Image (cartoon, rainbow, N blue to C red; front, side, top):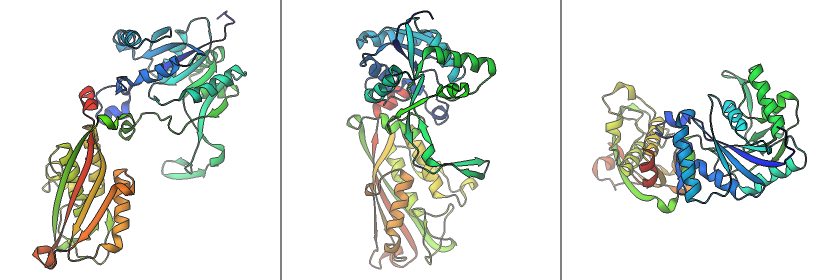
Length: 404
């Protein structure tokens, strides 16, 4: 590269396979998920286009999709009046291979580059501007990073080796900004010397080149898991769906009582195939009902030994994964335990908090009531316990139609 231009381009990586989401049932690459009327990768391109220092974008797609995606970008650029020049490049087997190919597609006039993951659609201009200013002030490499809030352990298998000093740790994000010549040299050495890296900044670190830190943002999240998909949903376009669940277990020699995943000491034992958590069974039926996916008997039949003494908390997670694959997400649940004995009041708050944690909902979105039937019926005669649950959920119809 012979130009002395200070031109800045962005390399937008959309060549990943999204293996975790695909294993969980997603049938399209996450970079193509619909968001704000366009594929997810376009959100970052749109952000870059609104920042005057950025003069162009290189889109990097899977090599076997290159012609198709080139047409897609051309259509988006036309219909959405994309103001920047752009180029399209083929990705590689690894992320670092995709970046290297993206760098090779940059024009000679480019001397600085931002490398960004298309699966981070929430990066804001103000954060990106901080990276650009660092480059303009002489940084050869700069990354956005946020403080680590959890205690981080260095482990070897199942054993803790060391507790790392949290004050010296930071979680790296993208986009990451670089002097182009330095980054190209880093990729050349990585290829020749067989480096395996997860971000570009680590290549500069191996070369002894200083990498600066700029403040990142908590909501600059990378879409990686099913729960992350909720961040892409527009509540205004979500259809409300409601499910009702009901379950009964009789008392007798069997299993210790568990309600909402909480053991209830000194309570009657319940006769059940799984762990007998009548409350979670009712809740699972409510969630399946909201999604139109039958009941727990269909998914976890009581004549299948695989579910003998199975944890209802584990089964609940399977139900949550299932309904989310169908675009249904719980928003609020209301549950009732009906029993003459035991008294539920001492355990109410713990059950509520535990259930909320399992659902990934705030506690105020989970309600729990307990009542008796005034000595009437089988519960009144202390022969068993029953539970009811109502689940309010949201179904993202547009999301499902475009991803199935």
